[in-house]
Length: 393
Image 1 (cartoon, rainbow, N blue to C red):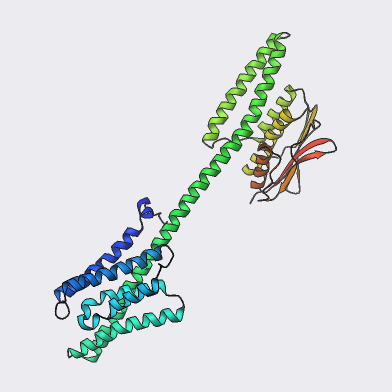
Image 2: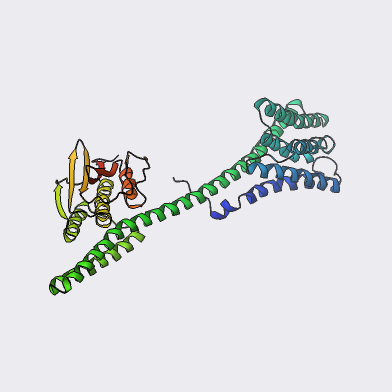
């Protein structure tokens, strides 16, 4: 059996059920007193005014408890409620007992400290039980009957008071649940925006670079080789079509990248750009989806980074396996001025690389796959490396 989330209207207005829980107890006392359910009828005006005052005080206490706080001047309002509940009972009898529930509930809500709370609750219950026992003995009832009724008064008063306290705490939990629900929704929206922004950057970065490269190449070939220029333009339209498909897939979070496809595409694109590309890619077999995704995005972003920010004449893409980990390394000789260098390892290192979001996205994906990321200049060459485990827990 699975727990269900309360309806939205309950989360938005949880205080109304709590108020409704008080209403029968507020109405009970004046009705019993006016009708004289136990003894002669009482003064209707006094009964209504006294009950209204006690009910208003109790509602103030309960609604404050539902907010997780105690109202201002609560010692005075608690004292007034106890007096309203305990004094009239000695001449109005059981008709007035319902207000004892309010007094006990307010004590349980407002008082702190085990001994203080226990003493106050005991005195409150003892006063009502004693009144019932004495009333029964005066009516010629037996001692066992009187004691039984006194115990019944204690149990009923305690149960109703617990219901009021539990109702206030339930409302407080519902308020916290609604706040958490709102926060989670805002977090989910923010994460989705970050995902779309990152995926658009990583996908369109390479696609737009390829379109620009092929367009320039087609313009240069128009005067020399029309057939080759036509082929480049046809290839350009294919890249544009693929980019449109990728954008639509991103909005539905259905875009999947293939490591082999990205490596082949990177080699073709770099070759078209005149970059001498060498591949040293072992047959790694099947990889976990998170690892394959992290490596594929690294290949795509590394290629885009090379085309946009370097003057590389050669590039090496190496993929190797060692000690249960897969390592991708992209090295080029086109260092032109590196905006930033950084590295990260493990989950949650939170590295941000450079001023752009491309390499930072590679770092985030590597961390998500329990891997590590590093990018920087070494020996006059720019190196980008990503390492992920073969098996991700």
